[in-house]
Length: 392
Ligand code: SAH
Image 1: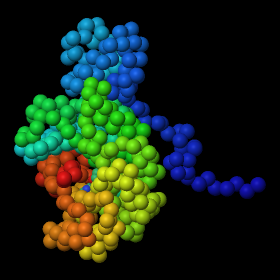
Image 2: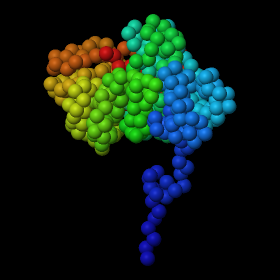
Image 3: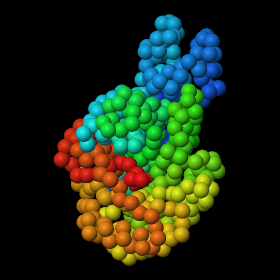
Image 4: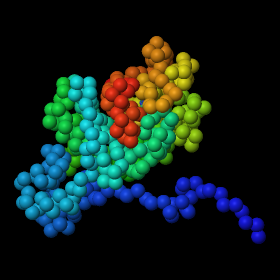
């Protein structure tokens, strides 16, 4: 019998899976639970069911995350609840502010020492939270800092929700200079690919949008889920019949270039991903947002603007151009302003609504594609540019 050489297996082959340690998800937290789960959890603790509503009012209604501060609960119950339902999930590791206090970034350490970030952005009429859905990211887009380090693990529902509740608390404290003291928008544009952590992200969206005190009571329309274009998950999202805004990170209108910039394009091509996005727009009646990071001499040619214009003409879509934030060691740079202006002009000429994203978070690496927590120990205060919010 011929013995075949042992070929190294892919990381997902059964042998490798058997020996690989699965990343540990965090302990259960109040924010993981829906209304029925919350009642069940408090009765399991031997507490009356009405305590569940009381806890929701504190957590979602008053943004109190520490049971010790819930002083209308008996002290013994507080300790029990803290131990069982409010394990600390997010430990602030570092907080940074810039733009005169209108942009604030929090670096969190998770229970297993993984690091993720959230960014809070204040505008005259609104406050937006940019949250992470995974520790790291497995999508490997070469221009994105998070993509370089690979995926550590999915975040739990509560790890996502608790970022939002924390940031809502910061907003409510009035700390966001020049903005209303209320969080009104959430964008899933921090670390991770939200649709690769699909069930948890959807559940988090439900919690964030459930009316207070069942949830945070934000409008579904004010939630944006951004994706590289995982077509089956986009189709699943259509079936949820949610009213959330979908952002598609396109970055190139042609497969040749998109295969390189967004490697998942090798699996789902531009035509297919746009079809799914247009179907989402048709189902919700809401404009989709096409994200396009302009990279000098890579994807900023006039012919690519024209091709993008043809693909989007007459569709319920809006283009959001992002000046590239060069990541450390990157060979790429943002497009010069005249090139950017010409790109905008051509898209508008094709009848496509186009905006250029404002720049936020430049001194604190709180920018699009800059959220690479492992690098934060050496934050470069002079690092190049930009933001993390959809300019609308
Ligand atoms: N994984 C999701 C959401 C996270 S990134 C997605 O890709 O959509 C949020 C947005 O920032 C995406 O549009 C992403 O392509 C963009 N981005 C990433 N790195 C960037 C960089 N260096 N400069 C500008 N935009 C970047």
